[in-house]
Image (cartoon, rainbow, N blue to C red; front, top):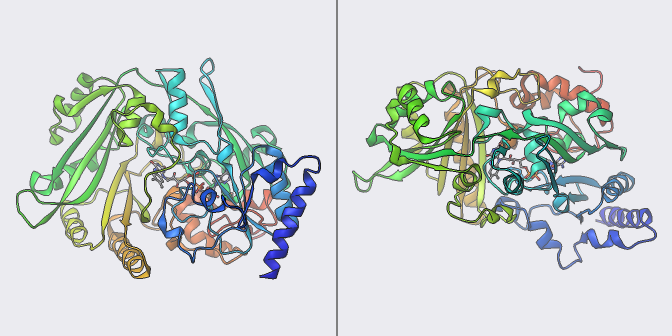
Length: 515
Ligand code: FDA
């Protein structure tokens, strides 16, 4: 439309005025006329649901090299009425970092803000938001064999979204989640000011550690506490199908997984597989994928004492360094750690994810009912992931950060449905079946609210009206993601962004006076 064309011109003109004596800004701007526009846009899109011709595309993408360029992009967006989205690793489940139905919009892509500075002396690091988890782990391991960080498993996930939404990984029972280990941050606010922990104040510093960055500003970098780990860790993967007593073992796991030695994290993947004993039939396979911070002998003692039902044997276990365990869990066993620096993820697919939290163990009867439904779920590929909580996660109070899933949470459930077939029919079928399975699970999971994990973002939980937010409406998903912290997030949002400049489908509402 002509309105968007005007805003677009105004935006570019405004930017050029900000940098009158240099053409540096033009090198980091991509419009639709630029031959690299599509490759820059698609560079970190994993989910094919957001690459269709109907997907709204930005008028401009800016890939800043300097902080002043981000400040200028914010200023000029405001001046020209452009909406903005901020992207770090682009892994948002609903594509919110690069898709907007508000037109016109610009993406600030932090791909060039990816430096990491490690200080082994103080066991701290500054990490820019556009770095990836893989790059962070690689860089720490280059400097030390006994320092590490607690965050997610997939190496291509971006720091910016991941840290601002929580950050669960294989060491979370020992060290908590990423936000529990962030000690400072620098961000640019709606007025273009660069603030650190001291100048932003404790309310805003609290909000960006689990409340999502997108509501509050552009987070440039984070200071994290590095964590002391042993030189040797142990990993194992043990599979049990229903014919191999999986139901009993999974049932027992629910009583053990959040209480066992916090050096041990037993993650559980459930998948439909073909039965090896009954040809033509499908069964459910439970895969226990685990990390122990220590050697195999001690691990076997812990398992013998607390979870003998799994029948873990020494042959199942592999001792290795922490960085090798990162490769192992990412599916890169035996590769050089350099592969962690690769930002481009494997071939994308169509994907829908959802989440739940479990606070009461599910009975054996309940598990059997779940397996029956799951076996009959007619989707291309699906996976249910149970991630145990407890340990350090539950020692931290619910209000310490906006991430509320603490004491009382036994495990998180992640539902993933993946398909390859193009087109609306396949999309509708897979989305409908995913939603059906989620509603089927309601009796087994947390209630009032039925909690959800922000980093597994799900727009089925509700969305803001375009350009406008309502407290009542937003509290529907706000209470699921943040529990009792939702009100404080609204308060912080109202203070730091009263004009609701930083907004998306699920940003924190700005309603001064209603709280
Ligand atoms: P992206 O760039 O898409 O940003 C996500 C959101 O944060 C958007 O709203 C965006 O605008 C905002 N944002 C990003 N950078 C910002 C900045 N600098 N300032 C302000 N706002 C900013 N989670 C987990 O806890 N444990 C895990 O093991 C995994 N594993 C995993 C694997 C795979 C394959 C995927 C796709 C996702 C995960 N996740 C996960 C979920 C992941 O933590 C979540 O999607 C993060 O938000 C991704 O962060 P990115 O920076 O990549 O996303």
